[in-house]
Structure formats: structure tokens, C-alpha cells
Amino acid sequence: MKRIWDRLSVDIALLTVACVWGSSYLAAKELTAVTSVPTILAWRFLIASVCLGILWLWRVRRIPGRAEMWTGILLGLTQSAVLFLETFGVAHTQASNAGLIISLTVIFTPLLDALATRRWLPPSFFVAAVISVVGVALLVTVDGFRSPSIGDFLMLGAAAVRAVHVTLLGALTANKPYSSITVTLIQALVCTLLAILLDPLGVLSSAAAFSPTAWLNIVYLGLACSVFAFLVQLWAVRRTSASRASLLMGTEPIWAVAAGIWLAGDTFGWIGALGAALIVAACFAGQRIEARARAARNNAADSLVPAAILASHVGKA
Image (cartoon, rainbow, N blue to C red; front, side, top):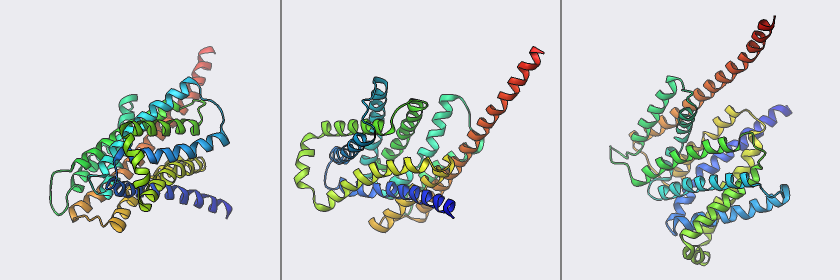
């Protein structure tokens, strides 16, 4: 019974993170109506930086080395690029569209990794990728075909840059004795500094101009979507399989659509609804195909080790 409850609590935690991230597009969209994108990000990550700083003092209290510092700075720059594209994009498209298009990161990241490592994915993965692209083309319709908005293009760019960020995250931190809290804190500080430099007057004037609703959205983005989501994700992924975590986290676009429809009144024509379904289905399928291909490669590599040892003994005999 305890094992079932432990697994259920992890699943609920990961679904909560996906739900929080899915709803972040609506909160960001509401804020773009009252202030600039740099101001939103400056306050969001200032709040996140303070909370992560307190956590760093409590749990880490170790000055990062040069390599760890530069890793955090580089990841902070790529994370900033993702967030600026996302927030500018959500200002010019529906929150539900934004959440769906950004989910294409699930398709872009394995493609980028395959190009970097020259380990090609099965043909079925590329079928899923094509279906996801068709889904985006259908999504950017209302009751008929129309040209995509600038927001749709910005969200597509954000998905591509996020794939680069995720790839760098793995490449730069794998097998390194870096503190996750320290690296994340440095990223948040870089995002804060860049946002303030882009609109210092806006950041200062907004402190008194924000309504209680705006402050609530800012605090939600800073605490729930940044600090809470990171900590819960870190706790949960250490207690379940990577494939299960990815599957649960992959429900983010579903929550984005739900928030957009129920809270913001977003609408889809039947063609757009078909596109949304194709995106979600293709991303799930692509994720599962990539996970199976990676597991097969790992099993093949493990099977080669005993064979090599046996061959070496035969040669000596």
C-alpha cells in the first residue's frame, strides 16, 4: 500500500508541475497587457532569485568554481532567450496556442541531439515530427485557413531555442559535480540582470503601478512556475523512471489548452482542434519512440561489454 501511495504522490507532483507550467502562458499573457516583457521577466526572476538564494544559503553555501559559474551563465543566456521569445510570443497569440506550439520542444530536442551525436532515430520518429508540423499548421486556423501570427512564429522559435537549451543543459552538466541549486540560481540571476538592463525605468515604475492582480500573476510566475516547479520536479524525477516523468510532464500543453479555454475564453475551430490533437499525439508518440530507441542503444552497448571481455580471454588463450 505504501509503495502504491509513494508512486501516486510522485505522479501527482509531476502532474502539478505540468499544470503549473501549462497555466503560466495565461498568467504571462495577462501581464503583457499592462507592462513590458522585460519588466515581467525582471520581477519574475528577481522573486525567484531571492527564494533560490535563501535555499542556496540553507542547503549549499559553497562558492561555485569557474567552470560551474560559466555553465550557469551560458545556460542563463539561453534560458533568457527562451523566455523572451515565449513571453513576446504569448502576447501575440492565444495562451492555448502558445502552450501547444512550445510542446514541439519534445520533437526538436531529440532531432538536435541526433544531429550532434549522429545517432539517427527510427523512421517512425520522423513521421511523428511531420504530423506535429501538420498539427501546428492546422492549429493556427480559427474557422478556416489563415496566415500564422507573429506570436505563433515566436513560440515556434522559442521551442527551437528551448531544445538548444535542454541539449546544452545535459551536455554541460552531465557527470559534473555541480549543484543543481547553484546552477539554477545563476541562471535566474542572469535572467534578472538582462531583463532589468533592457527596461530599467519600466521595472522601477511598475513597482507602484502594478495592480493586486498583476502582482499575483508575477508572484505566481516567480514562485510557482520557477521555484516550486523546479524543486518539485527535482524531487519527483529522483523517485521515478525518466520515461514516466517525461510522459507526465508532457501533459503541459493539455493544461495550457484547458487554462486558455476555461479562464481566457480561447476558442478553436474544428480544424484548429484537430491540429491541437495532432500536436499532442505526435509529441507523445515521438517521446515514446525516442525513449525506446535510447533504451535499445543502451542495451546494445551493455551487451557488447561481456562480448569484448570474452574475446579478450579467447585471444589470450
